Image (cartoon, rainbow, N blue to C red):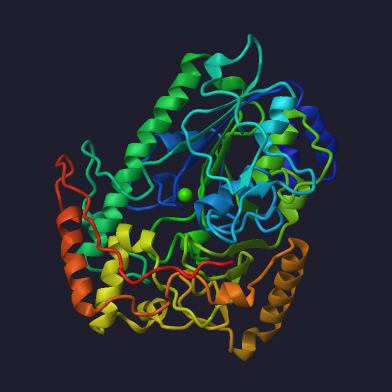
Length: 490
Ligand SMILES: [Ca+2]
């Protein structure tokens, strides 16, 4: 009870909380870090329609669910590099997704920074990766994790386990147990409300339902082994949702990730936190819970500490995506979002092989754009160039459709946020955009294909999207653009 009270105090951010936090981490807990791919708040506990995720909902009901939670980069490798260290990806030289190839060589972490699993290993934890995915843009002298399962640990040794469930990554597999009706889902207004898009969204909901069962199985294992009581569990998405305007972009659909934490006896059940939190805060929280002092201060902060409770802004950045060269930076408060487009001369939807080969919704957006069938709001994302600054009042415009960068009423707050963003960019050693980078990558011609091409592609997607949940329909092969050789850096 005393510990519960202590945590309440920490959550409420009273002055005693620093001392209290030290006291609450007496016995070293196990740590289980569950990550799902490419997903936002589309879970039933976050109020999403047409989806049923009872296992994740139960986890949330037993702990705290964060409703203002964001990744630092809207794609795997920079976001995961940041999460594996607790530092913003630019600061550790990991901002480019991915870094193989000329001009992009993976290096060791700078400034004596160590990855979280190494810090825990050195503190006596058994560290294990239950799947295979780490996807970090740095190299290490020894493997990131010691083993594959916590069953390999010594008697009484605490463990740190991480797992990534892949089912919410495209390709989305349909749910044979509980298919989702297209009428049950919401279509955000930046996508056209047509059957094709509804089916795509519903298939994603089915994919997360499949993943929810995997999460349930893993949590049941903790229960069965009597470990739940002394295990701090995190549930998180690695980057925003894999839809056209989500992953790879700094709109909320790309930046928002679910975040849930459970630790019986320490985190009161049924909490909803409105603090502004980032994925990298998990690192500092874990180190504090394990009583590990790395000897340096992380960019991320303890989720239950004063600094997070007082935080006004979060920051995110997007750079190269494979050979699609672009650069954007974002600062977000609860009320406003400012996006700085460092390469405004390029289209949002310039060629990206991964997205054109995997995203049915992107094909439909392209086709409807070329047919003139999108609303003015929807067609902004299909423009050939971008504004240098985008500024949104999220209270009135949560879907980020009306750019207020030129609106005089918002000039003061816009300037303030731009100043904060510039200071933040300096503090994380943001390399920005070189002239060589500006000219690099795949050809930035837009539209990337003709209307006839997109018509053919949409036809291929239709067969896949509307196939029955239990069918073994083949994932369509979308032809690559033959003359899309990237310009590589020297
Ligand atoms: Ca991902």
